[in-house]
Amino acid sequence: MHSKKSVKGSKQGARQGSKHLAASTVLLGCLAASGFSAAPAFADAASELRAEVAAQRERLDALEKKLEAASQEASTAKEAAKEATRVAAAGNGAAGGLAMPKGFSIYGIIDGGVEFGDYGQGTRARIQSGLGSASRLGFKGERNFGDELAAYFQLEAGVSIDNGQNTGHSSNISNPGQGAASSSAPNTTGVAIFSRNTFVGLRGKFGDVRFGRDYAPIYSITSASDPFTIGGATAFRLWSGAAASRFDNGVFYASPKIGGFGANLAYSAGMENNSTANVGISGANTSTGPKDEGKGWSGSLTYNNGPLFLGSGYLSFLKTGNVTAPATENVKRTSWNLAATYDLGMAKLYAQLLQGKDEQAGGSKTLDRQVWWLGVGIPFRDVHTIRAVYSHLDDKMATNRDSDHIGLGYEYALDKETDLYAYYAQVTNKNGGQNSLCAGGTCQGFDSATNLPINYTPKSLMLGGRYRF
Image (cartoon, rainbow, N blue to C red; front, top):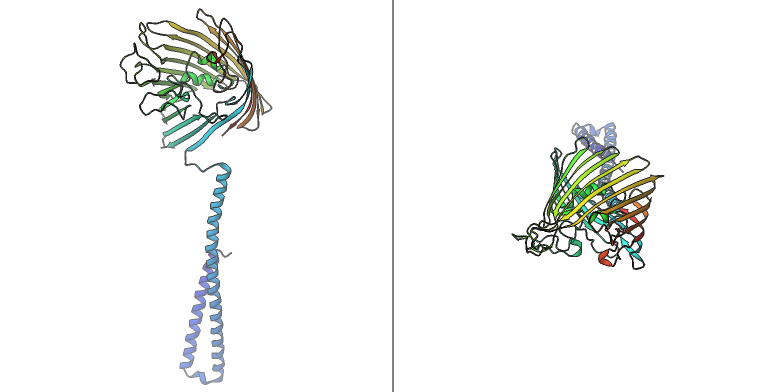
């Protein structure tokens, strides 16, 4: 193939050949005009010159043809290079996923397996989604504007891979995956597509502020202090009965981290209904329910430095429901918790303490319990991890319906994003208790509302795999 340099040289040679031909022609003309053409010597010279001119013309024609061929070859090579670049880009896209706009990404977890569960009605085998971690599909986007300022969004849907449906994840006002309206606004259909977290936010030197549906701060430090990260054999079900995990219709703020310390604050506007009263109003997912239902706030303080994590959280919100005199407002749930982890390298230790109450102004106290757990995660030989947790629920009401939870787990990593697991969990109840276990990241174990007998010990063995992307 001729380079651009060789093509340029060919053009220069052609120009020089033309100049030589012109000079030869002028010389012949001069000789003829001077009368020397009659002399034999000069006649021979003229013949030689004519022959040279003819030869120069032939060479010039050949050079012009080579120049044209070189130009065509260069043009063909340029088009081939463009095509090769296009094919390479397409190949990279096929190998690594679709090319995404700058700052945009798709992520998720696909988790599935089989559960062998005993919830008081015989052992049942169930094909389940999200036994290790709740299956999900999410979309993220971020745009940077310089000086540490960035705008971002997240849309995250719970996915049940065993039947293709979305999964329900409750909040301070709803369980949108079950068809109950997540807001009483007129344009809400009642079933959430992005039933996990969905928000838009702005991040800068001032911290991080976002609007939408997200984790309550009290939950965020709980997830961090659970050896199963709210999945598998987690004791989260005992915890969730005295707190809340998400806020709808919320504004969330996270402070900048200073020396390992940070603070988070969240406020929820609740059901955002069109009512001016509480007493005598039927609530829960109606546009004219009690005016304050669902309203509340949560905050946390954390310290995270090296192997040590410490956190404390608080929650207060008005639950949804009817308000009947002499009560003057919805049931108020208040909770506080402490969380801690410490990474020893050879093992990581976990601890959680929660105190929660349900009280109603003008009414009575309906819940008062303390839940704590201790856990450990032990990785070894790079691909193996053993997890364990023990949790106790101390019912401080006169009923004294205490429960104990035991959770064990083993995980085998195929790579950093894919693993196989085996989990076992059970809950022991007494004094008429009907607490159950989660059976995975979406708490799928049967409970008192689904035929769990009193004082029964539900058990679950979970076998499956998890694919992260």
